[in-house]
Image (cartoon, rainbow, N blue to C red; front, side):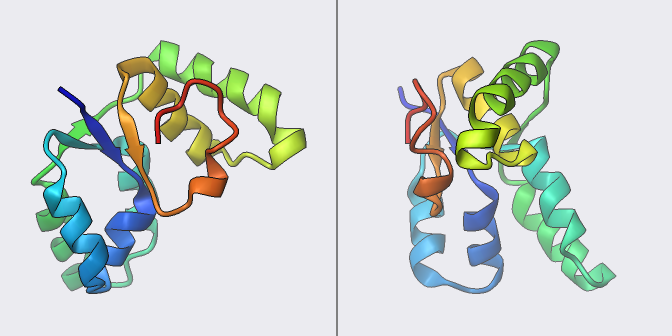
Length: 121
């Protein structure tokens, strides 16, 4: 059975009320979210009301923690793709999480990830 990791940009879309993204996210069986996305999303809240809405939304997904092997894999991705593709560290961690667990990455930003060997989008 396919398992999915939802990228940060889709959660942002859901919070902004974009129905197409909400339909997509809600249609995914076995959906997970990386702790890295939690960090990115919390960074974007401006008040307690927004933070509570974010926590309520994210509580419906299994959170995937980082491990030593994910961190090392992300570092290898940064070494391989930073200069050629300007890979961001958060995207490297999210990609490494998918590679480690065999998840499909569900993202709106295909161009941020399409060059990573073995990553299922």
